[in-house]
Length: 112
Image (cartoon, rainbow, N blue to C red; front, top):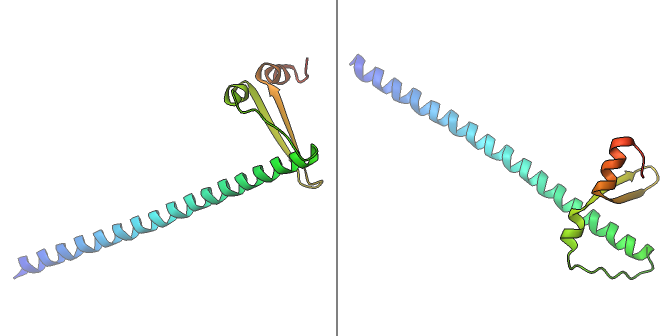
């Protein structure tokens, strides 16, 4: 009789441990989903902001800009892009430099 009760208690403890593990995994999955949803929202906001800045630059450039896209990836691979935002003045300043020139600026703090 005692053996059956012991086995039953062991099974019950095992089942309870599995249920606790399942609750932990469920919580971990919910936290991971919230994290990735936050990352997706941040990416969408960044995409919208980039698009707005592009359109604002075109408007300030006279309303029309033609950009040749052939070799664009190669051209940008040799550049360093440094954006700076001034929230108080509502301005964004974007500097694009050659990587060699940018390295020189970082090395001695001034452009050559």
